[in-house]
Image (cartoon, rainbow, N blue to C red; front, side, top):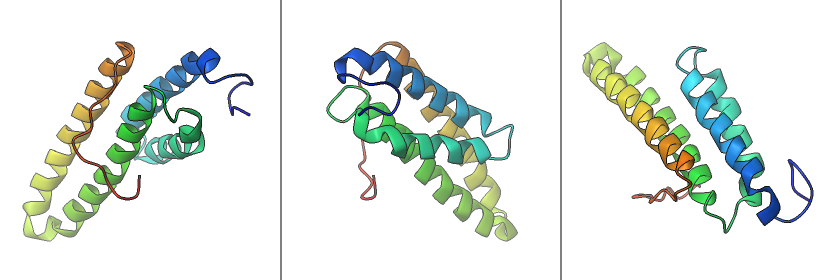
Length: 124
């Protein structure tokens, strides 16, 4: 049974595409709301990932999950190295990287294209 609606996966790919758009929006809003929407977004990713397995949307859900975990890692490294001033560079790079991931992913989603992932994290 699909989480959003019932029926076959093909009939409801637009539902999960819409959800992916909402998740990109939640990731973007994290900059305004102190990151809380980023956690909501990754929860939605994991809760719905099984419904998009084997479809072109799977790459977007994996992309969004990877963005969350790498951003969290970079935030931790940046915060820990703030006393050495290197942390500012890490945090600025992380912000630029996250914005790039959100924008490029959202554009690819609107074109209904698959995202080609360069890396595969072991916990995704």
